[in-house]
Every structure is written in structure tokens, then in C-alpha cells.
Image 1 (cartoon, rainbow, N blue to C red):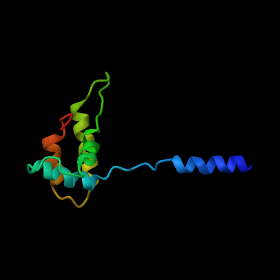
Image 2 (image 1 turned 60 degrees about the horizontal axis):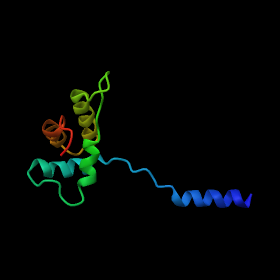
Image 3 (image 1 turned 30 degrees about the horizontal axis):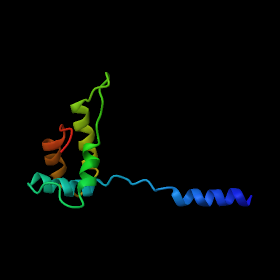
Image 4 (image 1 turned 90 degrees about the vertical axis):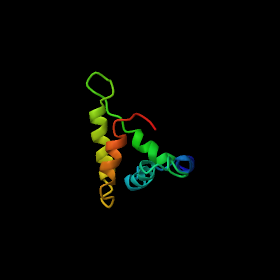
Amino acid sequence: MKKCLAFLMLMFLFIMPAKAKDSCSTVLCMAGMLQGSGVVSGCKGFVQDYFAIIKLNNHGGISLNKTFNARGKFLNKCTTAGNWPHMINNQYGKQLGF
């Protein structure tokens, strides 16, 4: 029993918590990009979260329309962002990287 308990405690030390994607931070960072600031310090991960959203078509290729829609849904989760999600997605929604 002690070995089992010790093993469980050891496992909990090495388990990393999952990080949820933060749509509002992504909107903030990408709004800066849209205004010409580029990817500023501390924003690379949030911008990567956006560009990591890629949807495939029925044949396994990238569907730019599905990707555009999925990225727009992600940005729209930030309900306090006004029109920024729409503007960002119109500019970058069908791009595969930055």
C-alpha cells in the first residue's frame, strides 16, 4: 500500500496541468499585429494558438474555409473584444502561419 501511495504521489509531481487557450489574450496580441507591431514579447504562444487551429477537408487536405470559421469561433469566445475578432480573422484567418 505504501508503494502504491508513493507511486501516486510521484506521478502527481510530474503531471503538467493542461493550459487552456486564452482567446482574449490571443485577440489582444493579434490586434497589435494587425496594427503593425508584429509579434511582441510575450505574445508568441497566443499567436501560435491561433495559427495552430487548422481544419481538414474530407480528403485530408487543409480546408481554408473550415479553418477560417474555426479560428473565428475561437476569437469570438472573447466577448469583450468588440470588432477585433472579425478584423483579425479577415486578415489572418486563411493564412497558415505568421
